[in-house]
Length: 98
Image (cartoon, rainbow, N blue to C red):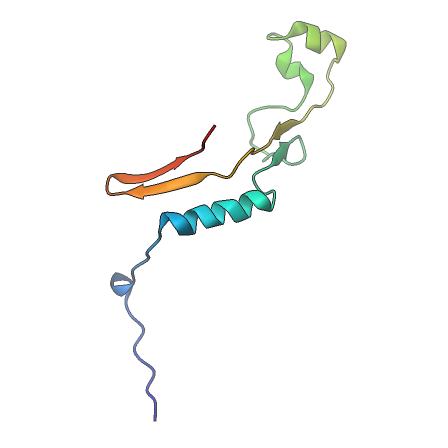
């Protein structure tokens, strides 16, 4: 008869990651388009500090506000390449090549 071993405590569990694992995840996320984000009044969190309305620019870019008073706008964030990581004895680093 096989006995199921005891469940280890949290102090007995180790998690090991390598840069390859994190870089593979980054590549998959990038390829899937999950690093491309569009922020607007419906996709942003309710407590987001920016109103997605041209009135935000009334003091900075008055010409924009005058041309499009109180019009809605979107902010598009697009990743051009996956994020690379490096794990070294001094810590973990995230970077991208340009």
